[in-house]
Length: 201
Image (tube, rainbow, N blue to C red):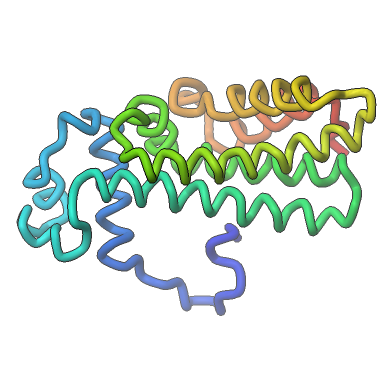
């Protein structure tokens, strides 16, 4: 069961809202064609509504991009904190939890990785600042646990180690298309944990 399904009774999976459908569709379109290659009319048509009807949900195409990247950054941080809390002070367990959570994201949201990498400059400045702040807090979770595991590791090196692990894990849009996602998850988890100096347990 994914983090998104936790706490729901069997058979009670929530239908995505119209806003969530628009965000998911936009992520796929932006990933395939680029933010500037998708018009409001294109996005509306892909969602089964008219272009003008899209404005009932979002004031602009930039607002779609802003909510897309802000909401996933909030989600990464929220679940990341939960994984650290669940480890109850065990830094290695916390890092294993963080690696597996990042992989769940990277395997299920490949389009978002592409969009963030390619269309970052299209974010409005306020949204860019908000996403950066959330990302800094998320990477700090990893850095804190790495420093507990290795007290000789300073902050710049802890940051570099965490970012290197992200680069490996977030390779999913480009790598592993010819193997099942479960196998790719296991492979990348093993590689990321080894790179971070964490036993697989």
